[in-house]
Image (cartoon, rainbow, N blue to C red; front, top):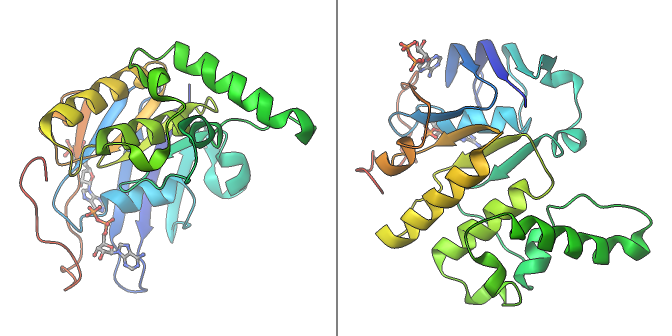
Length: 229
Ligand code: ADP
Ligand code: ADP
C-alpha cells in the first residue's frame, strides 16, 4: 500500500493565481481521506496533480516515497485508479468496460480472454451483485450502476491508490447508498482520496481534510452546492 505526501505544494492554472499555495498534506497508506471545502478550493485540482495531469509549480508530490515527476503517466496508471465525477463508459458490455481497466497481458491474441477472465474473478470478490448484469449494455445502466462499473474499472488493475471525484453526485438516496457500500468494499487495503460534498461519503473516511479558496471565485465556478448535490 502506498502513502502520499504533498509537500509545500503550489499550483495554479494561470500564472500568478495559485489555487493551491503552500499545501502540506500527508495521506496515510491504507486510509480513506475525504477532501471537503467550498467549490473552487482546489479539491479536484489535488486529484489532477496526483494523476500527474499537471505538475506542481513548487513543492513536491510523493507517492510511496517517489517524486511524481520521476514517474511517467503510463506507469502511474498501474498505481493510481481514478473515478471521474462524470465517468464515461464505452458503448459496449459491462465486462468490456471493466476489462478496459485490467492489465493487458501480451501477446494480444490472449489479451481479451485473459482480461475477461480477470474481470470475472475480480467481480466474484465484490459483494455488490454487478456480476448479474455483466452482459448488459453500458447504455442501459442507472446512474448508480454506471458509477459502480467505473469504480470496478478503476480498481480491477489492482492499483493501490484510488482517487474518487464526487462519487455520489446526482444520485438518488438508494443509488448513493449502494455506491458508498461499493467504495467501502474496494477501499480495503487501498489508499483512497475522495472529493465529496456528501456526508454519507465523508462518513466512510478515516480523516476529513478541508481545503479553502486561495483565489477569488471565477464567474465559471459553480456556487457552493448543499450537501448531497
Ligand atoms: P474544487 O474541486 O474544490 O471545486 P477545482 O480544483 O475544480 O476546485 O478548481 C479550483 C480553481 O481552479 C477554480 O477557480 C477553478 O475555476 C480553477 N480551475 C479548475 N480547473 C481548471 C482548468 N482546467 N483550467 C483553468 N482553471 C481551472
Ligand atoms: P488542519 O491541519 O488545520 O487540521 P486539515 O488537516 O484539514 O487542517 O488540512 C488542511 C490543510 O490544508 C491546512 O493546513 C490548510 O492550511 C491547508 N490548506 C487549505 N486550503 C489550502 C489551499 N487552497 N492551498 C494550500 N493549502 C491549503
